[in-house]
Amino acid sequence: MLTLHNPLHHLHQGRHEMFRGRLVPCHETPQRLDHVLAELQRRSLGPLRTPADDVEGLDAGLAQIHSPRYLHFIEHAWEEWIALDPLNAAQDALPSVWPAPGMRFDVLPDSFAARMGLFSFDAGTPLTAGSWAAAHAGAACAITAAREVASQRVRSAFALSRPPGHHAGADFFGGYCFLNNAALAAQALRDGGARRVAVLDVDYHHGNGTQAIFYERSDVLTVSVHGDPRTEYPFFLGHADERGAGAGEGCNLNLPLPRGTGFVRWREALHCGLAAIRAFGADTLVVSLGVDTFEGDPISGFLLRGPDYLQVGHDIASAKLPTVFVFEGGYAVDEVGMNTVNVLEGFGA
Ligand code: Q9C
Ligand code: ZN
Image (cartoon, rainbow, N blue to C red; front, side, top):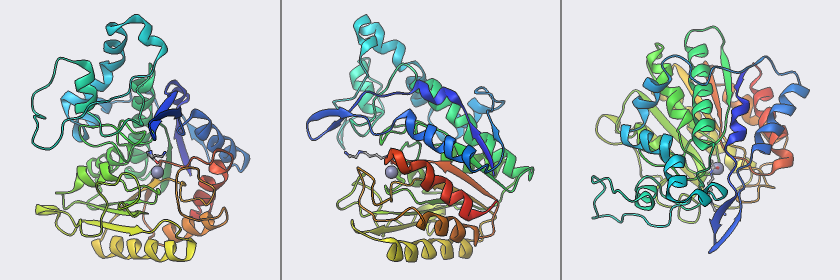
């Protein structure tokens, strides 16, 4: 397994997220990734490489998935934030006002606070001095991983990047995510010659951003196994009746499961997702690999145990497809390395 990573991920280090009316310490920390990296090295699971954070065609790749106005905003948001008040340099930026349905999304406000809301959907995703640099370098890892697989230089690759990506849409951030790494990888695979790409999202939370980005496309199947949005974040997408639209009708599959689900039932849903990927005729696979399905995860509600992740990797390998893994959630910091690398080891390449 070739792993792509970039130490610049450390530059995104949020202080606080809004939770039940209070600012609490961020769950999505640089230490998460460091633990995965250490475990990969401990088990010698293949070469590590750092792609250039301005790898050729990166900006064009970003523009295929995200809107120009969103990319421009995220790239320059920190400068704007400290221009408002130099003392803001000691604070993360968080949104606190959002447009409701029926309000104007087409007019770009002058107000920075208003644009923070226009381009986001929660107050849990702090924007910091290094958020853009980290997200940009992470996107370069995802695109490079996809190019390595598309060119058949490797059979599988792992984009070990953060911040994560699957909640980010074409023009919004949220759920700790800014750039949708899995979507960028899927698009790079298509551009590299793949005909039908499947994205399998096994993070605890529904991959709303990835679903929305490909919802009307027939060349990318999106499948997500996740906590039922009736009770679980991101709440407003991820139901079983969302099947795709237009040309993408039938090209989205959601497999929501109740809080408290253990491995046996979770695995049945995984097999259902893998059967759909087979039926779709995918020639390449992207896995949004979140391990917040772990029983000890502090913000999630499934009950998977450490050794189960070896089986998860083995089951994913049964699809027998060239595969790009993209790191997403997993907040039990002491176990996130073990669980993530178990999937890769179980996959066996
Ligand atoms: N206090 C990913 O796993 N906050 N994002 C939920 C918990 C948002 C998770 C509230 C969770 C986002 C990539
Ligand atoms: Zn998650």
